[in-house]
Image (cartoon, rainbow, N blue to C red):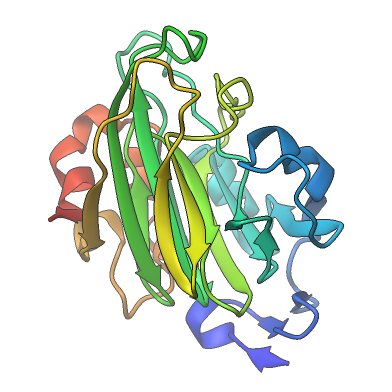
Length: 271
């Protein structure tokens, strides 16, 4: 078992061989669920792909008991996700991909912030002109890709759906802070069999294939690197959980992104 407590900011051990987690006895018992291969088939390039029965595990609304009231007051939720190192047909392991709804009375959708705790994550972020449109009608307006290492944090900007991909032959473990005021939704993701670009293996290296189900075409990918934004509690030397526990007001951007738009985009150094 790897002891990731210093990186996570709370008692946490991780077994890369089994993708198992061990929380300290003081941690609140998280709400637990899995994403199985059959549930992912509608968004895969190859719907008949083989792979493990369970692709990833999700632990929702966890944390230290003494912090629960603090996060309820600020409408925040802390989650952890653990991912298998596997292939799904030609594709590298990926999540189903989802969008966040618009914040009532605004033109902004809820953002989200991730921290990689083990391995490396490839995030695909895409914006569309209409979440509910069919693949024949939807226009993908932007696609951003970013690789994030252990200890780094990345904000999913308002209005950008996102997919997490694991291109390494080792498990991926990540956490997130997000507003507790909404539930994610999938838009046209299943109808289009995934996001605008697939990440497939080509002789041991990632290759990017355009998804032809978006009938109106897709834009070229833009790459970004992540940068620290201490004003939002996003510094590499401070665990994201502790950053929020010590100063939850810094994470107000998850519920009021319009007040922090410049700082949110400062996290992404677009190439």
